Image: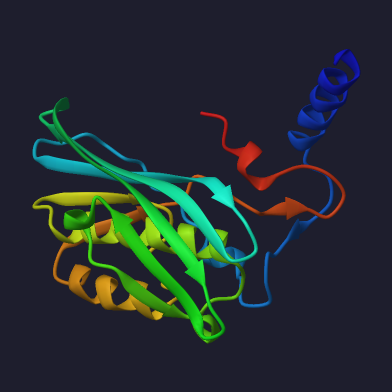
Length: 193
C-alpha cells in the first residue's frame, strides 16, 4: 500500500509542473477560446444541479443501476432548499437497442434507446440517463441554473431537453479538464487562487 501512495504522490507532484507547450484536446480547440470568469456573488436566486449514477449489477444482457439527481437552491448567499430525485433503472439490452424501465415507475416513463444512437454498453446508457435527468430538473427550475458539465449535447435525448433550456438562464460548469502540457503538467494547475 505504501508503494501505491508513493507512486500517487509522485504523479500528483508531476501534474503541477508545467513543461512544454499546451496540447489541445482536439483539432477544433483554440487557446484563444479559453476564458476564466470572476464569479461575484450577487443577490438573487441560484440553483446548482448535479447527479450521480452507479451500476449495482451488470451482465451481458442487462444492467441494474441507481440514479440520483440533486438541485440545491441559494438565495442571498444561503442554501434555502434542495430537490432530490432518486431512482433505480433496469437497462435490458436487445439486438436493436436498450429497453429502460424506472423504479419507482411514477418518476419517469420507460423508454427505448436505439443501439445505433449510443456508442457503448448499458453503463454508457446509465450515464446518458443521469445526464438527461439533470437537464430535465434544470428545465423545471426558475432563476439562474448552474449545471455540472458542459451544455453540449451528444445524444438526441439530450438535444430534446437542451432545446427547452434555451429560454432560461442556464450555464455549465465543467470541473474536469483534459488540457495537458507536451512534456509534463496540467493546464488547470496554473490557476491556483
